[in-house]
Length: 373
Image (cartoon, rainbow, N blue to C red; front, side):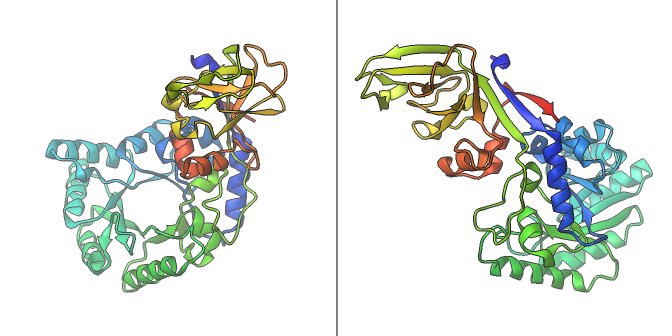
């Protein structure tokens, strides 16, 4: 089945998006693209060549940090998750030792994190870089604003540690009403105002980078914009981003059914006329959402063929009656790299009631990624 599914990853589109993003920044603002979740499902090995001039790369997990380092990346890496959340002391020690040895910058959110990192750095005879995550109002992770100075002072007591950064994350930067995000920014600035040291301050994700230039601070952390998608429809500003991803498949079977026949599990699509059906080997196991049943379209030649019936685990039925002379083996564009196309990532996300991030992150391992110019 792998031979039937291909995701084309455009390196030139990534480079284009990087240039656009950088054009929004003032000189001296550092650029830290988010490459977590295998570059939002696009594939680290394909995206990384366009990010070679980045100042830092941001990942979620310790495992992702090590994976990035193993690609040969020699620049800074910021890991958002702390291995100090592991349950067993031996796991914490092993993970921290590996990360510090690999010169990964670590996020800390509580005093115990600081002490664990300090112990590992001492054991290795190295100096570890840490970033403090401050919860300025999203209430997902981080230290309360009132406790930030206490942890910063604790870091300062240990020469084995360097406070490289202090950061926060916005909850509503992609919404038209920016008041809550601006309140978060003010809260974060107040928390950092009394610092005696001068770590990097960073807060801006893609939405804030585009719509809130006052949030750029010392470094920005763009994510979804790198891959060519607008953070939301509510943005006041949009960049002419180029989608990086295009997913292709092939027709594996063609058949005729009479008027009155129905298709798929539950027979949810009944045909009023004699209908020609094409079977495409992609389904929800590959990340093509089941909720796209009877809603989405795929492109065959110059025609858009509607999904007929429920999306199955491995297969999707298309109504190809109006698509011309479709034959077995013919190429099918499952996901388009044209933002205006009805089968674009953004339009599929709307049909599914979700966001582009989930559409790309859900694409499964059976879809072979290939680099394109």
